[in-house]
Length: 290
Image 1 (cartoon, rainbow, N blue to C red):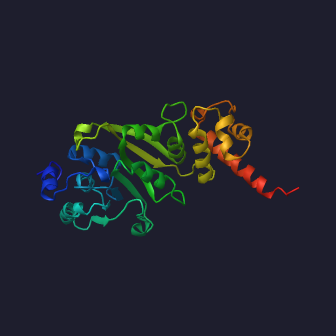
Image 2 (cartoon, helix red, strand yellow):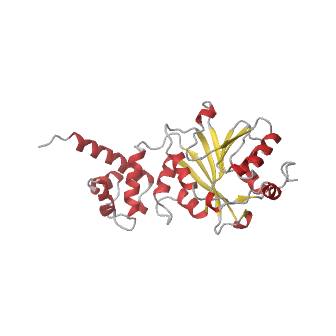
Image 3 (spheres, rainbow, N blue to C red):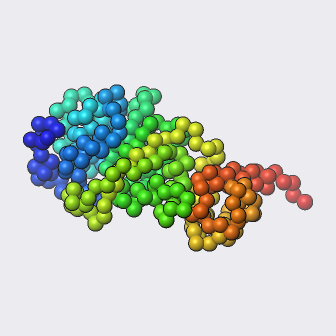
């Protein structure tokens, strides 16, 4: 039996249900229940919370969430082999675990929440983790349907999420993440903790949505960041030309010189450029033809 409940050890569960991790699904199972409990506790008190978990696999984090008191866990898993282990966990915690067999990238939990805000806590599959995060950060309306995300990524991705200006890892993901959330790397997890061991260290990241991010159109912010960082070694004078407006105007709105490079511009600068881009495009659209 395990140290957090009287369910069988995860290695036994994997063997019994023939649930070997599949690379095609981005699976690396975290079997140390002490570590899964640490992740669960990083999300704060869970007694009154609904937790959305993506990619539970054999259920190590699922068990930790329930053992630490989560009122309700909605586990989204596309691998039907995991249904057996998850059903055993659901039977052990009656009425507290709901299993959704489906693709997390198309799953909308809001109909299951009845207006309640949830927490997202997950060891995300490596192959879809970044895209899932972007989808959650881009959800509308804002503030979103969740009040916290505690997510595991490859260390390199985690560094990109929390990066700000002048950080080597700063880029489009850092702009979007830090515009809409407060971000922090909480701790690292060694490859040896997983089955099979990945080739890289993993990091647990906490993102707390900002109630009122600086005002701008998200779509335009993404466009400005994409243009600037697609040619990150070039000056803004060159990289922002792709937007079809005067780069000088955008840089001036951000309060930076047009000879600067994207990695030196703070998130607030990108927000200001997005607002100026909106104004310039609107002005262009209403300018009468000669």
